[in-house]
Image (cartoon, rainbow, N blue to C red):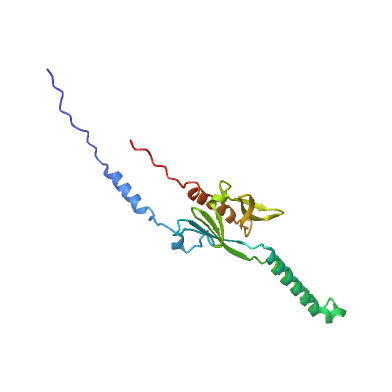
Length: 217
């Protein structure tokens, strides 16, 4: 009976030339530097927007939007009328020389100030807290989850005002505007981010109240 030769495992010899190549590449590779917004001093893309947990077990969102309320619009109109009246009062003594440099200067200044008053953007800071049993708007208006039910708040355009956006919901039998979410410019996506985070908070706290444990056999 012929016995097979004893088994000897294959041996692998490491190429010294390859080792030198790998060492050179490692020395020439750039250092792995981890950058963060704080280390480079950049501005946060969430400036004016924050989302935190509350001691009551809720989710609190702070945000800013463009103030487009009717009281503010009335104040703007009143200021424009006051500035225009003042400008007219200043040029009354120069009616005989309407195209003089002082009169044209007053007219230009009046038009510029009116334009600035109408175009100046005023932002308002708001808050919404979603708790397991309710929603609190700006720390004062409370809407209970059982009154809203499955009619979760939705982002909608204001009727007749395409630049204005509101978050609305049906509370009980009434359609209610819960909060404003007006973008400050064409690139502002605060309303969309707010609506998405609000939906996520409601799904986490209102639609998952009961924890289902697996059966133990």
